[in-house]
Length: 190
Image 1 (cartoon, rainbow, N blue to C red):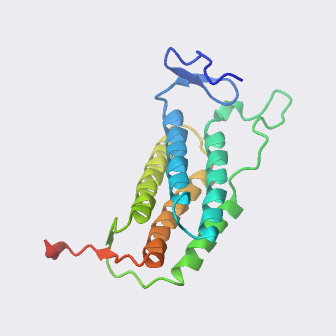
Image 2 (image 1 turned 120 degrees about the horizontal axis):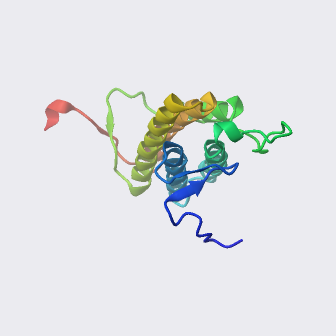
């Protein structure tokens, strides 16, 4: 399989199932941003962090690739003419969301209660988490906009929302693990 196909040279790309759309189509923007998010999560995973967190991030990367495939499938092309499902892979589901919630709950048991908003930063690894969180929020906003135009599996919206929460809590956990002071946002300070 060649990496270049020349089929996108005129500014279109193919969705799973064959439908061609403009490369700036909202569906493409949605799963393209999920792909960007996946790359940032890979960068977090490459840092000096615990093996357990690396394993969780690897699972999330797999889930994001699946979620991207779900978004890359046009709603009218989800099944073949014989009625079988075109995208024959495990889907993002309630178990995927529960995994994130359990990870969040487990990390929060070790963290001090939040009393203020926290400014991103303090350590490169923590900053990567905050960047990934922001990209996740953008992916969520784009997917919500897509959902307003055409049906998107609701589990995708929930997953992206929960993942941004996970990335925020992960930033706090890594701040603690790396002995980084969390800087509270206190408006009167400056």
